[in-house]
Length: 314
Image (cartoon, rainbow, N blue to C red; front, side, top):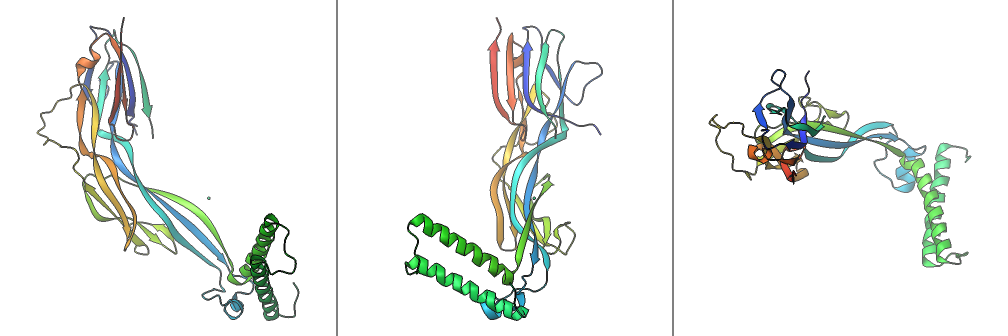
């Protein structure tokens, strides 16, 4: 498969008599020059999820009796949780908008930048009771220290801080024997959609607490919807088929309001550039037909013009 490249920077040194010719399409025969593609916009949806592994505590069945911890399961579990959903615009080569910059023999070779595409006890019940009592003792000790009522108060604030931290660490370790532990393995998925028109509550992806990210047609997952509204920031003329290639082509991207929702929860809401909602313009050929060095810089994601610099020749 032939890969297209996106133009990000173009440096042309031209003499007064060497003209730069630009045509649509690919290299013609043995002509000397560069073929490039303007980018079109894909919406990259970054989905961050956690794969959670729950390991029950040794005393999980006594969690409610001794510590009033409800909904503590005694069975190991694995499940997924959706952490965040973000969207951004990325440029991908547009095969329908490729251009060939033909360079005459007197033209100095161009410099072009291009882009390509984580205790022992007699029984478990007795042991749970003893551990629970120790947890309550630790809590009482912490309260006494904070109130300044402990039998052996620390000499200064730093020592108090250390003592409280040690007690909290002990309490947390013992509490886990009842509540169990959660191990979270973070994973990031990237989903790309290439819009050719507005989108209204279309399924971007599906998420299942049991399976994680699933296919759009897999009803085991709950849908996350995308809405993409053209903000019409660019006046796009009707295409009558008569507009000709006239100089170096670049994009004037439009903008879209993009939202990602799951039920009543809105995960993302923002404005993103979308080249499909804009138009294509051209740098005048006269710009390159003088005795000078012209440097043109484009945005690789949108194909938009960033700046044009000229250095006059001697």
